[in-house]
Length: 364
Ligand SMILES: Cc1cc2nc3c(=O)[nH]c(=O)nc-3n(C[C@H](O)[C@H](O)[C@H](O)COP(=O)(O)OP(=O)(O)OC[C@H]3O[C@@H](n4cnc5c(N)ncnc54)[C@H](O)[C@@H]3O)c2cc1C
Image 1: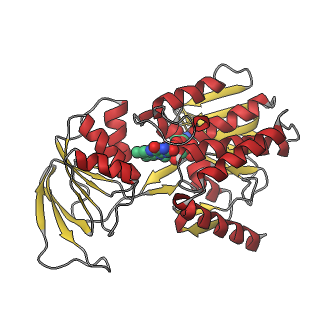
Image 2: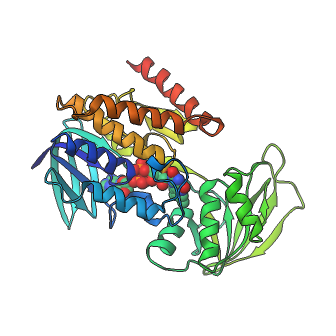
Image 3: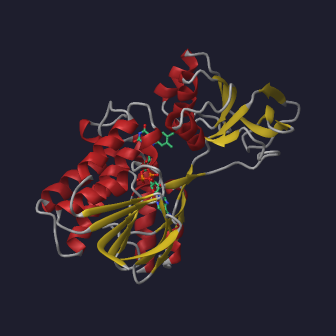
C-alpha cells in the first residue's frame, strides 16, 4: 500500500492549486487523475478567460493549465498518477485506484476530492442517436483531438458554456444553425451572446428540442415553442436540418466518491444539485476528507483555483504543518474568492453557500 500525507483526487485547476500549497508546506502529496493530462476542463478551453490578473485573465484556458502544472511539476514532494481512476474511497482514508490494468491502494492522512463535475443531459425522443453530444465532449473532440464533430449543428442551452462552445464551433468551420433556450432569457454573459449574433447565429428563447430525427445518425431536430410554464405550444413545431446536436444544459457536481464514505450530502440547486456538505475550511462531515472546486458547487475555473489554494492551506493547518505564509495567503485567496462571488452574477453562489452553511449547522 502506498502511503502519503495527502491524496488529491482530480488534477484540474482546484486539485493543482491545492497541491501547490501542500508541497510548499513540505507535505508528501499524490495527485491521481483519470485524464490523459493534468489540467481538468482547462486543457480544452481555447478561449481567453475573464477575471483579474491573479486569476490569469486574458490567458487561454489551456495556457492556464500549463502555468498551474509548471507550478507543481518535478517537485520532490509530489507524485502524479495519470490515466488512473479512483474507483473506491473508504472512511479509513484508503482509495482504490485502477491504473495500468492493476488495482492500487493508497492510504493518506487526508484526502481532497477535486473531481469536478459531469454534464447534465436532456430527455427527448431519439436522444441516443450518433451525432448528439454534450458540450464538453464537443470541446474535447475539437480542441483536444482536432476532430470535427459535425458540419451543421444546433446548440441546446444558452449558458456561458453553450455560448462559448458555439463560438468555438464557428472557429472550427462548423455552421451553428441556432442556439435554443427553454427559458425566456439568455443564460450566459451578454458579451458572448452578442458575439454570436454578430456572426449570424440566431438565439431563440422559449424553445426546446422535442425530438431528434434520423435512422443511423442524427439528420434533423424538431424544435417547439414553450409557454411560461414550459409546456409545448401546439402548432409551433419546426424542423431544422443538422448533422449534430450539442447539449449544454448545465453541470452536476461529481460527489459520488464522497457519498461512498457517507459524507452528508445536501441538495442545493444553486450549486448544481446534490453536493457533499463542507465547513468553512472545506472539510466534509468525515474527519480528514476535504473537497473543493466544481465537485462541491459549480462555479468557474477562477473560483476553483482560489478554492484549491485555500483548501491546500487549510489542509496544511489540519496536519499541523502550516504553510510558512499561511495567514497572508489565506487572507489573499479569501479576499479574491469573495470578489469573484460579489456582484449580481455571484448572487446564486452566495445563496447556495448560505444554504450549505445552514445545512452543515443542522447536521453538526
Ligand atoms: C465549455 C466550458 C467553458 C468554461 N469557461 C470558463 C471561463 O471562461 N472561465 C472560467 O473561470 N471557468 C470556465 N469554465 C469552468 C471551469 O472549467 C470549471 O469550473 C473548472 O475546470 C473546475 O475545476 P475543478 O478542478 O473543480 O474540476 P475539473 O477541471 O473538472 O477537474 C476535475 C478532474 O478530476 C478528474 N477526475 C474526476 N473523477 C475522477 C476519478 N474518479 N479518478 C481520478 N480522476 C478523476 C478529471 O479527470 C479532471 O481532470 C468552463 C467550463 C466549460 C465546460
